[in-house]
Image (spheres, rainbow, N blue to C red):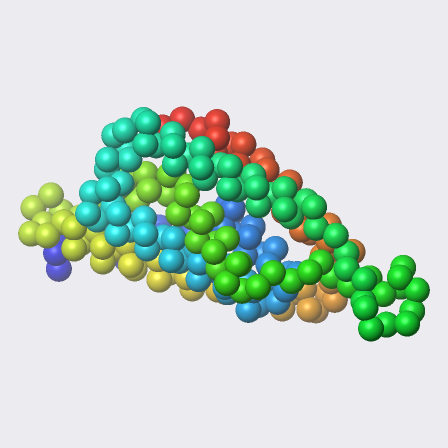
Length: 218
């Protein structure tokens, strides 16, 4: 249909690519470990929404313009890198909260870092994904390999494959959120551990933001 071929290979390849660690996975794991599976799923849904922006843009040709224009690529790259670094700094600055209702000494009543609202976590997932120009270039390089040159509607074929890729990605991301939250509950992650998990994730985000900023267009 629409000139799509080797669909099974596309699905398997897409799943393997989604499993590869990156800023999306780090955000999901950090939120699930510190706030539970709902927070991790909120991040995953934001990432899925960002992916759909890339899929739609690539299907209508906007991403091709991004790939062809160094100025546009660099603008999106610097904005994305700045946002990821800003998120990393925020995670590094996380602090333990004191329990206001407990009469115990402050040292004994520290609680986990303040929880972020789900809408903010969704926005973080969305912006982390949509502001990464490498994702747009990935779709332009990967998806067309599974569309025949004589396809009657290449844009429709691209969009269908992109939706399949994103659906499989959402299965993985939400599964990762549930697994991380379950593992954290079983291990009984303490507030201090959650704090350092936030800080470690923040450091990794700083490194990823710097890597994005220094990346070249290919």
